[in-house]
Image 1 (cartoon, rainbow, N blue to C red):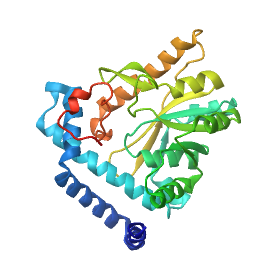
Image 2 (cartoon, one colour):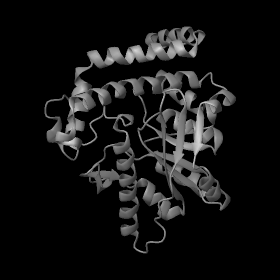
Image 3 (cartoon, rainbow, N blue to C red):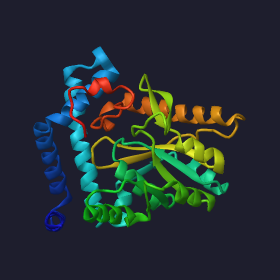
Length: 299
């Protein structure tokens, strides 16, 4: 509790400063974290070597690794600033790309399953959809510290997001879709044989969650992949992609396999375009290829 209240004091001080100062401070923190955090630097190296092999140069490894810390720090900064951000000021920082076909689906009266990833400014992306397209229901994992969890959820609620706890999330998500409301899911987290199916992701066979395809199939919802990215860490594009069709395939299992693989293929292409935008800090393949993490401790 004491740590939380100290954090609030720091937050109040930071918000007195100009945005450019806060940004510089968080980038400096990311550089310090990169220097000190050998454990997660090793995980990034293991992930990148696993995917890119001999094509990974030392220069590329350092570029992606440093930006992974910086991008995470800027996601945290946005979480803080979002609590004070007006919708008008927020809109100045965001461009919505290919949003027209999203509006078309909504006009048809179909709910949307926005399937995102830990790519670019993922905290900003969900808020932008909820603020400028339609309110969303978003899953969160319960945190060990209830004070910081409350802080995060209040920040996410700033622009109309409804927060749904991960445990027991299926029922409220189905309810949201049945009343023609939309949801956002992250499709790039690690899973296992029980909760996913095998797909080709970044050139490797690995398990991926089937939730977007299953819900879309059962509730006639549109799967829309979406990412946010930036060229200057200041102004962001939230890009919507074409709907992934799971309704025109007669066999349900085949449709779910198709939809899940299509999401994996989409994200693989986006990561390959700009690898540093993805969150390489987590052990994405620990259930599929645990041997690549033999030298890193469990976390």
